[in-house]
Structures are given as structure tokens and as C-alpha cells.
Length: 96
Image 1 (spheres, rainbow, N blue to C red):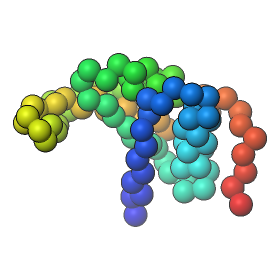
Image 2 (image 1 turned 90 degrees about the vertical axis):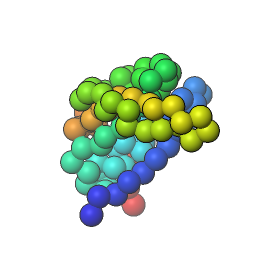
Image 3 (image 1 turned 135 degrees about the vertical axis):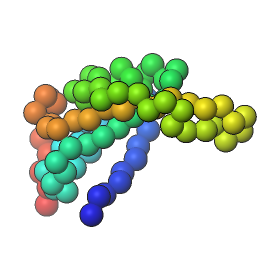
Image 4 (image 1 turned 30 degrees about the horizontal axis):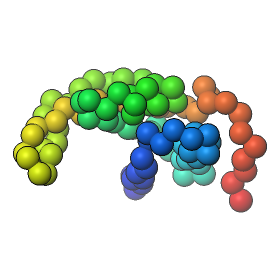
């Protein structure tokens, strides 16, 4: 089984930073994910910065991977992967 999760990355406040880190730790610790993949579309620099700060490594770019619904513009998706939560700051979190 391949669990899929989604969340919005570019919310700037401290609470969301902790939630992103907690989510990643949950995926590795409780769900026992071997890796987490994530991506952003061209022109989403805030998402790119957050992804990189979380320790994700860029895999490549999927050319014209999606089509914007309203105007039909083809979008490139920048793909990243994280294989371990080790680079994240420590959090006081436990999984019941």
C-alpha cells in the first residue's frame, strides 16, 4: 500500500513549520514510510524554499506534467525526495 497525503506548504507561521516537521516524522515513524516525495510547479519559489529547508533532495523536473484547468497551460513539476527525517530539528512528539 502506498499512502498519499497532501498539504499546503507555503503557510509562513511557526505553527505550520512545526506541523510540517511533525507530519514528516509521523510518516517515517508511524506509517513507516521509506521515503517521502513532494513537488512544486514552476513559479512557486516559496514552496521550493520550504521543500529545500525541510531537507528534500531534487530528483528532476517532469516536463509538462500537469495542465492548469482554467486556461490549459502546461506546467512543469519539480520533483523532490526525502529518505530520512534526520536533518529536521528535534521535536517533543510521540506516536501513541
